[in-house]
Image 1 (tube, rainbow, N blue to C red):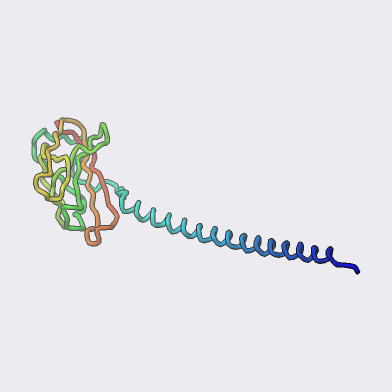
Image 2: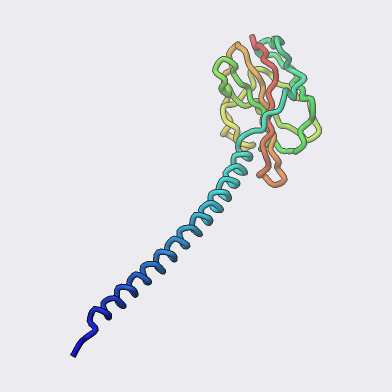
Length: 179
């Protein structure tokens, strides 16, 4: 009697090859869809990063100051007028700041401690009235910053305070001298 052992082995081999082929196709299809998902996730993450960056990174405007002007000298301890071309849009001392920038180091020498008001474009400032930290009215947290004679700019930054999340608008005055 003759047995068909060889024929059964061929059937098993064909079944194994078919399972491997189907499994490979399924694996490849799953991997391809993950690439599409990952591309979409990367696209969404990039858009979110750009949105967060736009909230943190100030949008630089051309000079929005009338005063101080290039070459102007303010005597040390004198009171002078800082004048903006356009008044602040939002009414908040907490999100609108004036900073004194040392042009030699390009670092903030301190905050001016000026309360900005919606619609107001002129602010008196005494060149020695500068604070190290800005605490938004929390008493006791504002320490004086000692300003020495030198060349400076004033930076004004304004943020949308309706939502608290708007873009920061930043502009700087011309370089002037305190001596």
